[in-house]
Amino acid sequence: AQTVTQSQPEMSVQEAETVTLSCTYDTSESDYYLFWYKQPPSRQMILVIRQEAYKQQNATENRFSVNFQKAAKSFSLKISDSQLGDAAMYFCAYRSANSGTYKYIFGTGTRLKVLA
Amino acid sequence: NAGVTQTPKFRILKIGQSMTLQCTQDMNHNYMYWYRQDPGMGLKLIYYSVGAGITDKGEVPNGYNVSRSTTEDFPLRLELAAPSQTSVYFCASRFPGTGVEKLFFGSGTQLSVL
Image (tube, rainbow over all chains, first blue to last red; front, side, top):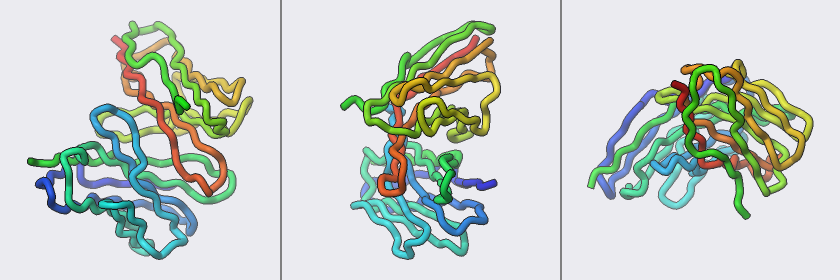
């Protein structure tokens, strides 16, 4: 069975600085999707970024980028120029790309604090 | 376009009571999911559905039931509530196919069983 591990329960970053959140996963499959979701205090889950495993190029979305290391099964999220609004829980998630697979597997989350 | 709507937002139950958490989406999504979120545990899949009339168990289905009579609605039923079911419950949906790989979430239901 696939698993997703986020080993950092909490991280802090100074406003305008850069922070990296870690995520590792375990799978025997070669084709899958990886995601980072943000959950602010409002509780609303927001998709931050998505990576397809067959793409070697790391995904980027404005100040958010990932470091996808397929062989190492690592998928870290880098937030540049951190803003107070980035403070939230961040969840890493995995979904197999196999036909007939519908489940998303989430990690336990990392709480990010942004210091003014 | 309201997206995914969950009701109620908060609820307190007594042990042994039953209730239904409502979830409806107006995006014509085939796939719908119920997750529970416990502190430090991430999101655990309870049940999911790939279309009207089709449901399947996730990781933690015990104590819950679901039905999917329409594309729009996916209610979650708690029978004989227990303190272990105290959690935040999220409903989510998505369109099938790999071109739009995004889960849309409701705003959650915070449930306390006392």
